[in-house]
View 1: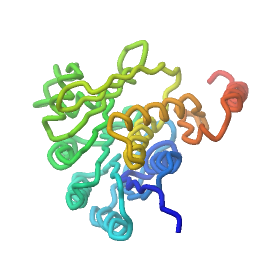
View 2: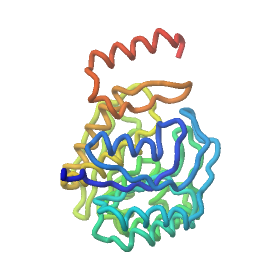
View 3: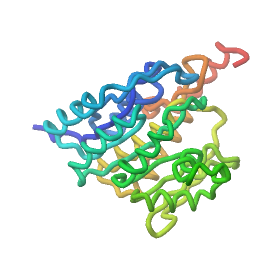
View 4: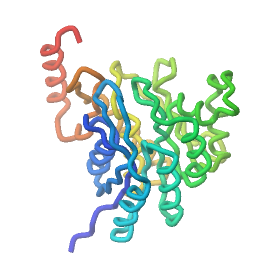
Length: 287
């Protein structure tokens, strides 16, 4: 019998547009040679422009989904995305605490790309208290890092130095923190991995001109898949960044909102992708 591929279990919300959430995780994890398990935390009403509403599932249903597959299959890595409620955060924290040997990658989804709030302060406090102490690697963008690291709702802390943010998040219990620089006003996108000894690695990437729906989900899932494939944290981070950048570069715009990463970019040649992008511009003049 053939050896099964490594298994990654993702906790995330359903995204009917297919750009982010559990759909993004499944595509990314499978594209990188792993078998994805999907634990749905919430149902969303959203498109490529933004999120209109979120309906969290019953926390017992979330926990039961996870326990059913965990008792059936050997999971190599956990990945967490949009959570939906404090009760769901508590339920997931309890489930994963029974598997301390399984690495946990967490993408702290606080807002949509449009800025829609997806986690209130009570949920953020629950993340800090219940999940961050169990996280192997946290993957916030700079805005999320500052929000998670903010103390006593001090508005002056919205401009915190990212190194200080990382120190605070590590102090909360994370083993590693990868802060992405997409939202920073820089020529290149600079992503920095922090560990207990300070900066582990810094990577600069060409800044692409479009905005993307599901880029954070893609990066975190790619790290999870790379870890499941046996790479180290540092190796997983660079492999996942490379995969994500190429998925964004080959992205497409199926609707009227943001571009969606092409997580199967490797299935087409660069020439085919360029031709498709040129045709899309012709078909949507003025966009």
